[in-house]
Length: 424
Image (tube, rainbow, N blue to C red; front, side, top):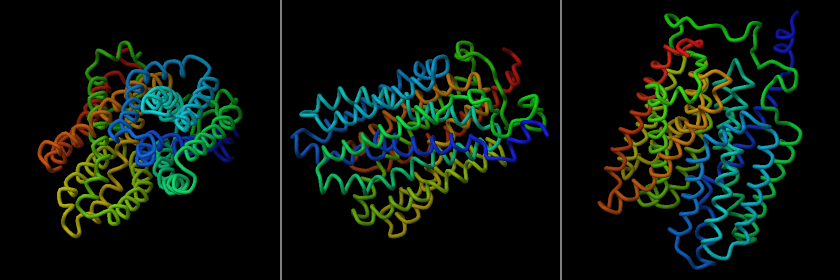
């Protein structure tokens, strides 16, 4: 029995990597995204600056990633991954702890820059690199489990943070969060994280002798293409342009979804909105797992149709949020629509590029996504301020969600001419 067959019959270290990725994403992502405004009211009341001024911290944090994504992904791929990741985790913890010492909004802005840089170096880009390197089979499932940690982490940490703020103050809550980030960073960075299976003398989960087989494009048209085209050469190709355009639109649509809570609160009241948000965050875990399974079993084309379709339908349903049934139907639909933003970007990239090129390519995809994510909420807010209604904002984002799926489909189709190293 060869080594590869033995590995499949015994516990594989890839599952440890998946555990690490899930926990890192579950803790590191929420403080930048879904939980970032949990401190807004307490901080602004205490320090006396506006909520808009506080929100600018989040914009700065996101904007840093737009420029640093490709750079960080290059360094993570070419240099010592463990050291860079561990250092990033230390900076992340230090930045969040620094929030607890802030005396004005400018302190938050400076620290937001550090947190944004550390976030890019420790969260989605490196964790998706790990998943892509360690899983040759079940990559869709592994990706969906890992990013489900974001929803689970947000749902579990939200009441904890609220309780800490209420009982001990906002400064203490930042310090507790920083200590959690630090603990995970030290344990995982020093002892558990390895960029590639080969670093531990292993092969990826599902590895078979001879490596990935060359695909038959006539029979397996929506599976991994193993494109090895360098990123410098990819920049001038139509498939890479479509990949980035789809990522920007994905960021726009998912950034717009951050305005769902205030829209729900205004239409249905705070109590109903809180219940609806809890439901769709919980269902989001199952939605992501389902999308990953669809990608593994049916291929990326079916996953794109499901992901883009459910997100577009979420914007359709919220048009009826003032109906008695509207918020509850929305909670179900958006629970599944949540999966598009986090599961599909790494999966689409991994079905196009091979292991060697994936890290750099995903850095560009993540940056493009953050471009959209930075402007999505602003666009929705601008339309609401101008018209006193969210209606046109939701209609526009129906189009954005559909175009996301279309552009990523075109990217995958266009990359076929470079499949298995052809055209390089």
